[in-house]
Length: 264
Image 1 (cartoon, rainbow, N blue to C red):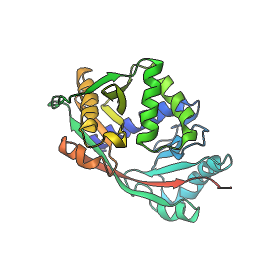
Image 2: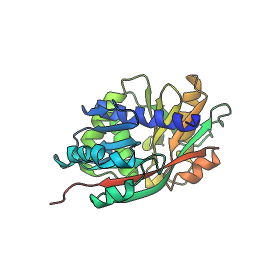
Image 3: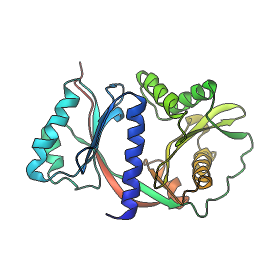
């Protein structure tokens, strides 16, 4: 396996293992090439999913159907990642037949060396700090919910995630304030292989001021300070140009399928 793809694979597995642990769920990785999880939370499809399924086409139905049934019996929204795309021949047809459409094609996973992290640009009025106190966590959640336009019912679940991870040394959450007002966030997750960067968002009213760049650089520098030589992230369409300018390169992509549950 390509070493950079392995770095991404390890990082995304650690991220969702952390979500699963923080929400009291089940993480399943006993079979080589098959990794999936369920938190039992239904507020967001990101809380249940299949991260890896390198399944021969002749065994696809036999192995995949019980996983689908596990989610559907409790009406749990979930996603299924085909990573790298084509890892499971016949997957798109199989999932489509079962009512699980493709929702994102080619989400970029990007990496960058931490050998030459650019200095954090000074922005008048901006301060960045690590999330440490209950007040910080509340502010971080406010920015996360609005910045990513998350459904309100998912806030308690994200609150459980933040409270659990904020006390663990491999996780660091950051918040930026502009003239004292919470306005942007990011998260660092340090795994065995790399420093992963997640949850980079800025409130709509504060976009265009360089806050996303600053929060990404803050996480990168923190990873470098902890001895890591490589960083990774998954890029949204909006974030991709920024990460390219910061020197991140796409090493692999993922196709994402999703089921949102049976709607009443």
